[in-house]
Length: 391
Image (cartoon, rainbow, N blue to C red):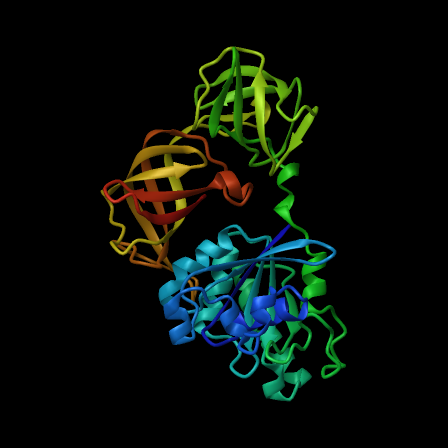
């Protein structure tokens, strides 16, 4: 399965592109075909979205071809909904950033590429849309490509792919277009069908956050989703943050191995106090428990983040109280400059330090996304007010 996030400026055609992709790949339900004339509305689920003709929240849509399954994340383009875009991109295997061929890069295009880079989205593809409105000219496509490459180099994004499309007319969306004979690459659907998924999670260090303990008579099974790596029967494990050692005795599914991102239940050779919030890892590659956390945070709360404020940090299945110790800087995602800041307002990104009430065992985000990410929760309202990436 491939998780695909779409992003870009307002009116660059994100929802139209998804509607076209669903329509031309014959992935619409029978009752939707009659409304397909307005392709953009196929993913607009909120009344305000249909009334205003914009995307506000992330819309998720499943579809499949004979080659693979997809989950499309239609992310909003307005700057005031940047937090929603970050939410949609955080779990994506590939980000599709649309750029209007007439306007080229906008401030929001730069912001979305920067967020995709910060979130470590494994693959980024830029769709130069509305090629029909520039006469399908190769020169205009090349000009946008140069503009994006310059910005991507500053972000550290490598191997960005480019596809010229017209979402409205379907050029290079499912079928390659005869209107652009100068383009010899794949259509968007061909590109997505061949894209790698999972970011190699099974190849990394083994990480099993415990979500639930299942009692079956005298047996205990420890259930969770493998966030990384592969486990085998007989593997020595460290229970974190306590530091006790044990071994894998059996898997509930009966096999000898289990690989990320599979959900599993594991039995251990020893009777230990293991519960929700603990993490199982091999001793040689285990993360160090920490009481301080340095991270890049995308602030999602209406109330600004300020030093001294208290929150809950939820990391994998473990939640601990925390105090925001310091804001080191705010990141201007349109210039990539670091600015001094006393607070982080809604949609702001910045580097912060938290002091934790109990130990966590995170990985650096650029090494393992699943255990390098966390959310910040308001203690009083239980609202999610921040999304963090461990540095």
